Image (cartoon, rainbow, N blue to C red; front, side, top):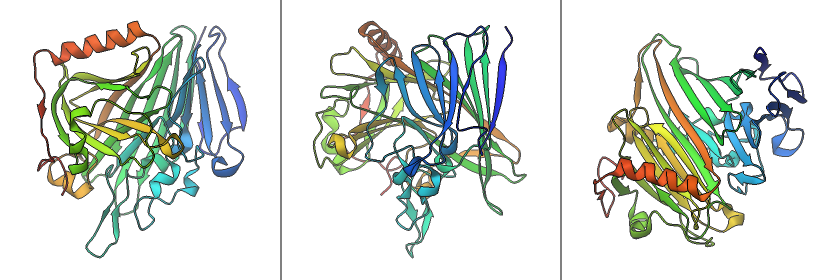
Length: 381
């Protein structure tokens, strides 16, 4: 059977349609548009490859809203009732924190001009908003392909972050999942569509909460170096990898890492539940994404009990500071840079143990270098 492709523009071809291909039973993509509240106008692509279901948001920079494996939801319970249309998110509001008004995804990209903390000039004027703008830019072209022979679904979306006289970047994302696969693979190609040189940053903000995140959950990663972002994070350094039960009023803690990798730069990180029976791991290339951040926000569930595992081109410090450290991707006029990234759900203990074994192999005999306080060159003052 031949593969079949559908093209979807940002205006939407329909409010509810199911795309299927002959010979690819159990594989489909449902395209619908939110009709009410903050979700009015948000396009969703609900991708099913059998037991796995992924919700992709073309209206929100091709983010992943959540993922289901059977009845098990992978994501978190944000106090934000989403997915939120970008029209309700004022990224440029004076505090620089408007991005949080739309934050409820499993995976949201941060970038492309900047991806860290908000930054203001000496007069208090906002220079760079929290986590950048790409997550609130709609895709202007999306293609969906279902291939019965390879048993693979491919979604290609094009999102642009451009401003006249300023930065002009285009992101083309390719998302793939196969029948029976417990996750998805992404290739993001960032192109400078200007003839002038440019700089960019990218951070993959992966957010996991209840029920996978519970008291006793742990992060497992092959660590070369760990640095607490601030004095408060340093207080929790001895137990950085472990999580406690939801605690109302918990103040977030953030840790910066350099990970170990194989000869080709491939590395990975895992979050497992307390009993090691479930987990989610990401696989990526350190040559593309050299920095890794863990964000712990184990406040009350109603306030957003969540942790973030975040590979990036840089640490999420203010843009000027990261630029001074050289943690940017430089693009010549017409140049491009690619990122390859993968997320897998581990549905039983044998899969979790296998992931831990792979990480242990990368760790080898290397003892992590642990700094007990924020470090110059890593953490913004």
